[in-house]
Image (cartoon, rainbow, N blue to C red; front, side, top):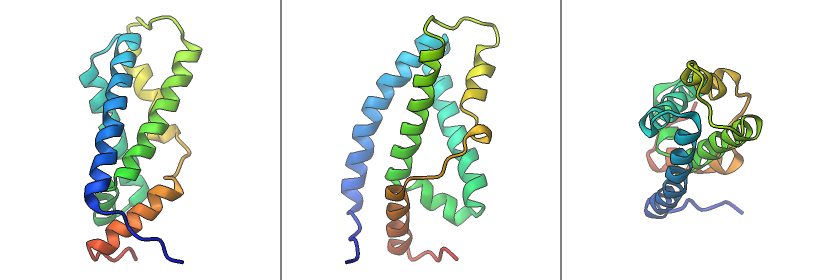
Length: 136
């Protein structure tokens, strides 16, 4: 039985709820790593773009991934899990002069051997069909 695609409005609602929790997480990490929330937000988006550029290897496909809320949910989960590892390994507030570079390395897509979840792939396929984009 074929799965039906969720309406875009429902996806937008999912994305909004995820962002609220993630914004709290970013605030906590900014305090722990002693950097601004803006730094972490920018790094989050920059590394996602870097990951997608390498992963998709096609601008149209990259754009569809960026329009997929399930991708962002997966990326947030991946990011949050990496941060939890940081908090576990470095329980005290990080004040080293090179903390920004450390945080960038910890989240570098170059060191992430991950691929989007099956749920993100299904959502990606639905959006590609809705926009009539060939994935080949």
